[in-house]
Amino acid sequence: MSARTENTYVARQTIVGTNRNTMGYELLFRDGSENAYPNIPLDEATSRLIVESHLDLGIDKLVGSHKAFINFTEKSLIEKFPLVFDKDKIVVEVLESVNPSEEIVDACRELVDEGYTLALDDHDFSDKWDHVPELIDIIKIDIAHIKRDELGERLKNLNFTDKTLIAERVETHEQFAYCKEMGFDYFQGYFFSKPEVLQKKKIPGNKMMTMELLGESAKDPMQFDSISEIISHDVGLSVKLLKFINSAAFGVRGITSLNHALTYLGEAEVKKFISLVAMAAIGDDKPPELIALAAVRARFCELLAQEIKHKDLSGSAFLCGLFSLIEAVMNDTLESIFLKLPIDGSIKQALRGVEGSEAGDLLKLVLAYEQGDWLLVSELSNSLDIDEGAISNSYREAICWARSFETAMKQSS
Image (tube, rainbow, N blue to C red; front, top):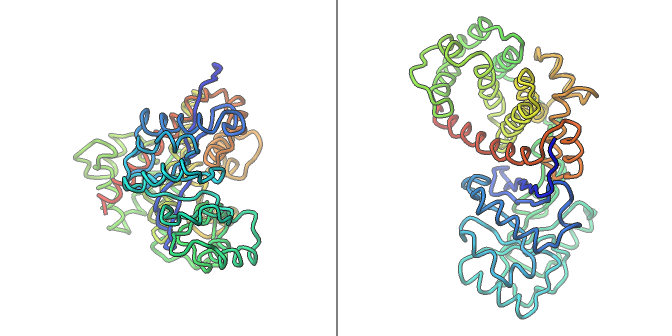
């Protein structure tokens, strides 16, 4: 693997509402081989994030129609860095380290006058911004290290009123429930990607059929006759699959049967897209971001498999990324799901985290990137012999690909 010293990463963390629909993403910048904030100045981190997310990539490709929450330092606010972005596309997060000096207040007031939305990041309940409440629209509070009773008391004494509240680091459904009860409007974290075991219900017959389809698509080799038999019992699913195959995601037209699709596209592509469609159908009562995240993980794993020149691994890597969220989609444990779905043994090993599983190592890399564990990303990229610059590019491509899948799904509905 060629050495890299100038790699930059931009990851995103989802922000959802009380209905668990996505309202935005916080963009996170790090240097490729080090944790950027401890090792390079915050101002440099902010400016490089702007280059990465806006000038090099285009912010729409990272967040689509949603808002991008971006941290800005004292210097970057004074130098009016936020003006580089469309005021309707971003939320300006003022870091907790910023002191509201006269110069800072003037800079923030100018941004507000221009129509920008300002948020206080990691608000520590101090009163230093109390004299300019009109500048702040959103308060973000990290709940990770605050006890529940203490959080409730602090919120009661919060000096800001009628502001939008965002709870950060919401990692469990229990945390989501009590933060919602305490009046938070939005929630940042991956609680929606974990199973709600207490709410596990009997799976409806139509979803059981789709589960069978999902299991069949995971077999190697794929038994197309079995898949056709399952689909034949669900006209709606059959029509949806054919519309999806004819959509822009494939770039082909005139596919009139799944046999035709298999012949034209090849087993690997048909298997991949059937898996996605089936996953979306099973999770139709789940937050949209859950299926979107599964699609990103699947494509991300597949692209990384291609980077290590293991073409035979691409298919299982894709399914491994997709099935990494199967517990949350089905509200069940992996072992219970394995009894219901005939998932390939190599994918089972990867999902169980068995040492020596290449697909499992790729999934670990994907999860490390997703969580912003950049030191682990560097360690795993070295062990897998993947150039770190390719990881960042693959993540971006995975996001764009997942968005095209989402669009195609809507078109096929």
